[in-house]
Image (tube, rainbow, N blue to C red):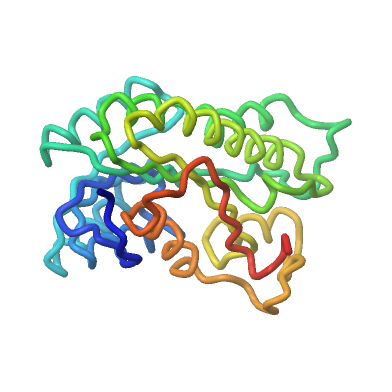
Length: 255
């Protein structure tokens, strides 16, 4: 019988994260480690990985890190393989690496640059595909995968066609994968954050000007830890009957 607890029972579980060295990924990694999970973090920044590893180890947590470009299948597969070699299993994953593109909010579809379009799609969609493929082949039965979509995966925004399209696609990929692995009791869900205080938000603000709270009815920006808490819940056995879903964590924007 599955657990009926609603608490995030992750003690000793091995969780792999992309984008785990900053923003929502960093907050998620720290919460998972505080709950006793063994975390494997992939990111493109060696310096940021070194910092987060030092922090988690200093708090008594277990962590493995590897510089990984999610666009590269061989790098992703090496990271997942070495995670299993290091910790002996893979129980869950959170695919949180993402980009917005340098012209986010400014470039209309009619004028869109191929190079930027391909970059956003390669990281946000192909990257999630690469990670899920490797993770599904390695994950223990009963495991859980959470992907990062966005409120932009549920609505359209002017000047953000590449980002919106990539995040809509992540939701579709999540739902399809959930139906493919359900027989193994592996769950696949995604989260759709609203406007959240992260380095990527700062990048977006620099690209397109001031960004407020969007359509949130809770009249403030979200904090990375608030999104991370939803991710941790979906990774846990508290969410044992939830799969193929997209959870909006957006202050009511999509209400």
